Structure formats: structure tokens, C-alpha cells
Image (tube, rainbow, N blue to C red; front, side, top):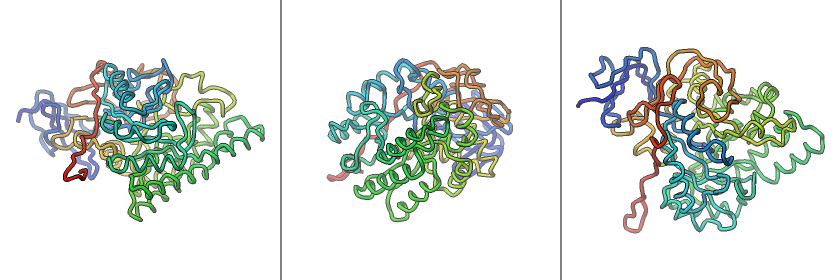
Length: 459
């Protein structure tokens, strides 16, 4: 076979690391993984000690949370620069809650001309309509569904109360897709928020006090018990607490499909240092926790209790993140450009094998969103989505790269021992040395394969 591209370096797979290995690409697909002398190719790079990973799949991106702000033109540019080759975009778009087949179609048509990397989509429901439109959204190609036990906004980000959540899970169960849920108990959070407001505390401490651990853990039990009741795979889209991963493990032990995602900010930033320093720019739901909890989460990674690592990326304009009243700020931070090098840094510092990078940011997300027929692994026949990191130290500065719609980041100033040096999408180089080469429209909409019906049963 004539290869189009061969990369040689340290190949990072979910189950092993191949030093002096190579990846060969033909016609946009992975053709071969090997060891030793790499074969000839039209384009061949001997990369020494560089890490060669499967392209990352970011399971949680909000490209359209703020109208006229980021959009796919910027989110996918940040992704390409950061070694993320597929993003899964959330359904809570300002002005377009993605809760019908028509809304899914609108979003695909909107994103396709802009996207520089591939994208999949979440769907959700309008609480007024209930689960009626879930089948049509599956038909339209959503990769999962997202709900929230907390109401951030009644229109854009509504609360789904327990009985409706149960009905939605029951509707999703036959489709084979997963129900992901934002895990904060609405009643508990509102009670604690009132206590904080009554206390007069408005500085950096206010956010953590308004959402103590119990608010997350109560919601997680609701989510997993709903999954157990309906037979629907249940997924918590972010958890800041080691205890939450223990709860999920207990449900899995009992035979239920119960998984948890960890965002890169919970593995990197802490309350007593970073929230104190950054204020509103470190306001995230659920909140950042003390440093001891960060280290506990890394132990959960090492123990195999984390299913996915994502960013929960959202690029709020700076004026929405700098109010001295902590609770008045928008929640969420950008992270697409830096997730992969931050995870590599954190894992190496703690002696955690880099195989987890390939598993938690590529293989498992591909399985989770039923995209593993084409995505998520350096396996023959799958898309040649590849991320290369070189051992070159850099200090992160979101405004310096030109790849972000906002110049601020909670990760500014962090020293990164490994830097993304190249990103390939279906065998084509889409970023090199921090410069994004992909034109808008390079990315494609990707979706789970249609479920086959065999003798009245889905397969």
C-alpha cells in the first residue's frame, strides 16, 4: 500500500505506549500502527520523542451560549490548535434550545460552513413539550441527550424535574443513546444561595459556599436512580468530588450503566488558590473545590473511575466574568486550546500512565457518543485524527495564540512541559505549531450510525 502520511514517535494507545512506533495513513484513514523502521510515504515525519495520540474528542462544548460571541468559527479554531479533532456541542444555545429535529437541522446548517474540526451534537427537551420529540432528534443525528437538575435559565438552560427526567430517560432507553445530566440539586442550591446572600459574603468564597458538596451528591443519586429505574445509560456530565465517582462505581457494581465525566478544570484549578486569585474568571458550576479534592480526582483517574475528560468550554465575554459580586458572574471557562497539554502535564507529574489520555479523551468519548465506528482510536480503518505533542516547554497565554475569541483564560500563566505541535483531521494537517491551517468548513457533522431494526428489536 502507498501511504500518504507516516508519523514516527512515541505512539500513545489506550492500552500501551509504543516507543519508536509509527502511524501510517492512507486515504484519510489509519492504515497501520507499527514498531521500528517506518515505511515510505508521500509525507513522512520522524518526530523523535514526540507523543503521537489519537485526536481528542471534547465531550462538552458550548459554542453558542452567548449570542454574537464565540460561535463555531472560534470554538473549532481553538480545538484544532489544541489537538481536539471532534467537539460535541451542547444544546443550550442562546435563542435556539436544541429540542427538535428542526433545531438540530438548523444547528448543523449553521455550524457546517464554520467548523474547522468535526462536530457532533447533543439534544435536549423543552420542559413544556416533554419527551415527545426525542425520537425525531435521534433520527436527525444527535449523539446523546443533555438535561439539568438545576435551572440556570428557564428558556436557555431549564431545570428538568424528577418525573419529567424519568419520562425522558424512558424515551431514550430504547435508542441506545446516553442521557447526560448536569448534577446540582435545584432546591438545595437555592437554599444555600439564600444563606450566602443573607450572610453578606460576596467575594470569591461565595460561589463554593452557595454550592457545597451535598448539592452535587444529592443530584447524582437522582440521576443514577432514574437510569436504574428506566434502563437508560445515565451519565453525569461533570463531577468535582471524589465521592461522586464512588457513587457511580456502586451503581455499575449493581449492573447499571452509570458513568461520570471529569472536566479539565477540576483536575487543574482549586478553590483556595485559583478562585481566590481569579474571582469570577474561575466561577464554574459545579464549583472548583479545594486542592485536596483535585488530588483525589487524579486518584480516581488512576483507579479507572473517570469515564471521560472534557472542557465544558464556554468563552464568555470578559464583562460577564469580572463582577466583584461573585454570584453575579456567568459560570464557565474556555479550555479547548489547552485541555490535552494540561492533562498530559497533570498525569506525568503524578506518575499516571499517558494511556489514560488516549482512553479518556478519545476512545471512551467515541464509544460514549456511538462514534467509535469512525472516531477515537489509532486503529486501522478509522479516521486518521491525530494529535502530536513535542517536549517543548511553554507558558500558556490565551491572547498570544490568536486562536481564541477571548483573551482571558483561568489557565493563563501555567507552565506546560508538552506543547501541541500538530493536529491532523482525517489525515490532513489542520494545525501546526499553534497556527491553525484548516479553513472554515473543513469539519463535518458526525453522528451515530442508524440503529437497525431486526425482527422487531433494535440492534
